Length: 610
Image (cartoon, rainbow, N blue to C red; front, side, top):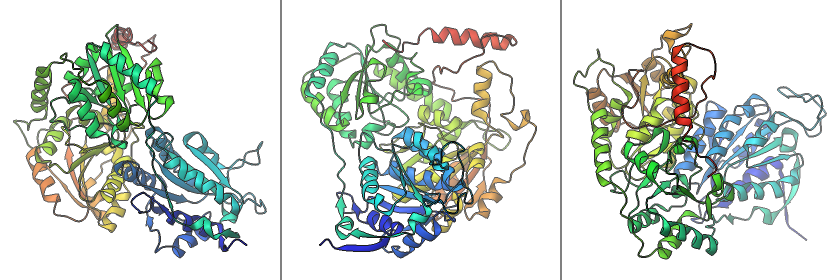
């Protein structure tokens, strides 16, 4: 007769999660972020308390930002570990939909445990229940279906015995890694069931390395041998595969320049002679120059997002061919690329061996040297450095760069800074963390906390504009209370400067982006606000002072917020490329006609399917 353990469904879930291990013998689900409400406090809340010595519970301020912290944690851990987040029914759950989309786009695992309606339907409709007039099985949690890699609704206690292993199988699958949503009916959380004892035995989850098809290796190797001007585009898959050394060895053996996407930046140190910066819309001059001329583009672990490809107008060589090395066939076959479906580390090892003796001499080292000089110029401390002269974002980046160390991680997510950082930040290996798949405003503060929790040995510098800070800053209080140190460089340009520039570029009038062009201009004391949440906060009046304060922040055990006013008008001052943002085809003043002319001139270079 099978031994059983009588537990509530919620207790069984938490007990089971605590026993899921990595190959190092550690928990795969490192902790559970939780805000309790009527849909999870009596069930999951009680279970988390019961097993608090086996798996920690983390208290946050907002469901979305708790998810952001968890996502930043697993990104920093290269998807080798993850976290869970639980919420109540209703707004607690729907607050997490944005984060689920963020994790889905970025291929990052997170477990979302959402309270749901009563499975027995006796008290329907319950508080916060969204009713579908035509479908009695629908709840608000159905919003998660298009942004989850796996979705399940737990309507009986025994469902856990299939749902939980499926959830972890998805989260640890390098091809399908992403958000998993378990909608957990609140009455079922409290129901008891006799679970088989062996269900709770420790289990090790091995993250596999899929081998490539030898025929695809041969096809791709033949394409590389036939090329004259290849370029490598390194994406986040290089980092998740731990393939940094293999990428460097591959590039050095072939003598091929490497450009890095937002997700892949930091795979190769900026100081490496074959690192030519970034491609596309936020590309370096030397990187884009080589991409434009390339007759073969070798993508490794990249989705070929429009910023990377300059909306597919970047690769101008009429003979251009595309290779995509990716874990998932969906990504590997985009835009009629020659696919190599494989783990990046294994694929690069196979290709390096197959191409032994092949070497190219088609890139211009001077272009890289010239680019680095240009970066120094636009990021240099201004001659008239002081409170009467607002610095550019590039000059702010330069200030941080000059005092950065090998363990410094620059992180950001939305606004002007992501593009400026990709173009200008000279990252040490693993010195960059950008959420730019979803470019989610509000990720920054919570994300910085997640990085610092995952890698306490790192110095985390969070670049955030006043717009993103206002959207989501509450986890600053969590970080201060838990004594999780990181530094926020808060740039105040009085509005949404990035979108304001895009509005102008697209022929529009300045409208509703900068406070000066809208119907409201709030006067916010950011220093007082940050200090009220427990952070060390101060305002600086110069780039020189900013450098000093970043160094001083290293001695604190709480977050530091350094505010500096910046000029919203200038862009990066170097690099860049075209981005396809549709311009109205009719009507408007002369500025709109000029924008349409620029748009048409660039759109002619788009080559999507060949």
